[in-house]
Image (cartoon, rainbow, N blue to C red; front, side, top):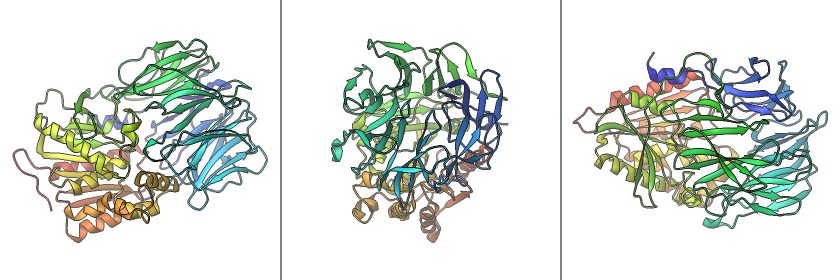
Length: 597
C-alpha cells in the first residue's frame, strides 16, 4: 500500500468532547471502520463503543451535560437536511430527540441540565427558527426571521439563551441577542454598521457557574477576532487586553476562573491561559504547528488536537502523553511546509509550500486552493497535499484575500468582486512560483474543493493561459443557478458577498460566475460532485459540464452518492486516485507546452 493511501486509511480520532457534569464520559469522531462515525468513551473503564453506523457517515453529535444522552444529526446521504436523534450513552435505541420538529438544516443546539434543549433550524420556506424543547412537551418557537440565525449557547442554569443573528442583512457579521426561554429579550449587542465597516460578533459561551450572567463573546472591534466578557444583566463589557497578533478565540475553564485562549497567527496556533481576576497570561506549552481544537478539563489539564504539515494529528494533554490513541496502523509522515510572502495587489500574501524531499525545480506544481472562503490553510497535516508531494509535485497553498487569520480587512476584502479578487492573489503567487524556479510554467495544476473548486473553474476561464489543467471538487460552476438551488443560509451569505441577489445585481453574478467564461477554458478539466450536495448543488454543475461537452472540450466528470464531500475513506481515496490519474494523463511532459481546447 503506498504511503499516500495509508494517510487516508490510518484511523484518526477527533478531540473528545466531555460531559460537563460527568467528565469521564466523552464523545469523539473516528474513521476506524472506514467511515467517519461517532463513538462513546467511558474514560473510567476505558470502554469505547460505536454510536452511529450509516452508509455515508455521521460527524455531528453532542453530549448532554449529565452524560446520559448522545444527540446526533440524522440527514439523508449527506444532504444536511434532517432531524436530531438521541441515544443513551450506554447504548440502546435511537429515538427522535425533538419530536414535533420537522426536518430542516441545523442551526445550533444547546442542551440544559434539566433535559431542556434549544434547537436552531432553517428551511427555504421558513427562514431561521429557534425552539425550546422541554421533556414530554411540544416544542415552543421563541424566534423566527428570514435572515440567518442560530443558537449560540444556553446558560449554566438554563435561564438565558444566546442567539447569533443577521437580521441587519449582513450574513458575514452577526449580532447577538440574549433571551429567556419564553423568548423575552434580556440584552442586545450589535456592532454592525453596514457596508465595509460592519463588525461581527460571535458567542463563545456562558460562564460555567449558576447565576453568572457573563457571556464570553468574540468581536472584531480592533480589526481581528478577539474575546471579551459581556455581562448580559448589567451591560458591562470587559476588554481582556490580550497582546497577541492574529485571531484569538477562547473558552472557559470549568471552574470559571480563567479562559483557555487559542491564538492563530500566520498559519500556526498556540494556547494560553488567561486569569480573569488578575489579567495574567500564561503560555500553555504546545509543539510548533497547529492546534485544531482544545479543551480544559476539570483538573486544569488542557487536552488538544495537534498536527503539523509533516506530523500526523494526535490528541495530547498538558498532563503528559497521548490522550486517545487510534487503533491500527499509523499514518506516514509527510514533508514540512515553507512559508512564502509575496507582494500582492491588496498587500502581502502568505503561501505555504511543500516539495518532495531533496527535489529541485522547476517542478510540476499543484496550486491547491482552500474553501470557505472564510478559512485559511495552516501548518497542519493534510493527506491530499501529501499525496501530490508523494507523486513528485510541489504543492502551493495560498491564503488569499478572504482568508481568516490575517485581520478583518483581509477577510472582508472580497466583497462585490467575488472570486476575482482571490484570483488576483493566486496569480501573484503563481508568478513568484515560476520566477523563483519552483514551478514549471507548462505543468501548473489549479485545484480545490468547494470555494476552492469554484476558484479553480473561475481561474481556468479568466486566466486561460496560466494553467495546464484544472481539478475542481464540489464547485460552484454556474453561480446564478447555484444561488437558486442552494440552502437558505448560503443564499444570505451570497447576498452579503455580492451586495444583493442575482435579480438585484446581475452584472456582479455574471462577472463572478465560472459559466460566463466556460468557452475560454483551453485545458483539460476534471470535476467531481456529490449528487446530494446542498451547498454546491448538482444542477448548476451539470449546466457547466453541458457547455464543455457542447464544444468537445477535454473534461471528465465523476458524480458520487454523497453531499458536500464524502465521509467514507474508500470513496475519498477513489477520488484522489482519479485526480492523480487525470493529471498524469493530461499534464505535459517536461519541456513541452500544455495542450487543450
